[in-house]
Amino acid sequence: MLDIDITEQFSRALRNSRKVAVLTGAGVSAESGVPTFRGEDGFWRNINPMELATLEAFSRDPETVWEWYLHRRDTIRTIKPNPGHYALAEMAELYNDFTLITQNIDNLHRLAGSDNIYELHGNIHRNRCMDCDHTDYTESFSKLPPPCPKCGGRFRPNVVWFGEMLPHETIDRAMKAAYQAELFFTIGTSGVVQPAASLPLIAKQNGALVVEINLEPSEISHICDIKYHGKSGEVLPAILRKIRELKIMSIQEK
Ligand code: OAD
Ligand code: ZN
Image (cartoon, rainbow, N blue to C red; front, side, top):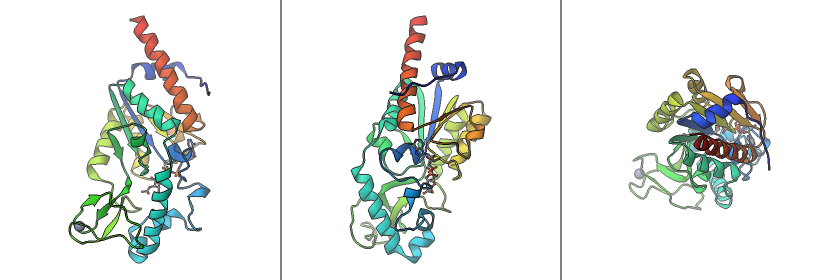
């Protein structure tokens, strides 16, 4: 079991913060076996995911893009949350105001018991109609996306592709949570994709203590006050244990 050192400043923030926000990226699911985007395992048939996750690729070659999504859905269906996801679900119980923002589309936070999740990039298990906006969980193993059951229009995976806007309400709420946070965690994200990558900065500029958990330094490490370079599935449970100790101590002190 990993034990971590925490500074006085971090300990105070863990104990006293009322508003906590968390941004997660592909790294938080890596230990569950979901390939990250920018890691070597992110490639499929030697194709860079950045070349598949676009509306242009889908319009030009829907069969290939759809097959990639069927493959990823299959992989994701068999995997389970890891101790990092569970620790975040438990952390939410310890704070009055806890916001979980994710760039992941794999549903693992929900399976671990988190609720009220802001899924910035959508959810891979859903489809959306390009004509009437209807969304559903229809399973399909056909070579091409099935037609929309409502209007017969064109279905696509309900995820945000490169160059597309994020769902308005979700990003607005996420920004507000970052703005108001006293303590902000950025976990398992390379911090290169906007606007998600600006959330830790918004938090920092508005007075939050920003904590990074990542295997290695990221593009946003330089703005983080506290950095843990390790696996989120090990560091998060260690932080959760610290929070429990600190909260128990503060109850005893009162
Ligand atoms: P990336 O693949 O860019 O980054 C994953 C990060 O996780 C890297 O910084 C790794 O060092 C780190 N990492 C890997 N394993 C880890 C572990 N066990 N514990 C902690 N950290 C670990 O993924 P994202 O930052 O999520 O967007 O990518 C952001 C967005 O770019 C994705 O949501 C997707 C992608 O293109 C869209 O599809 C719109
Ligand atoms: Zn439709």
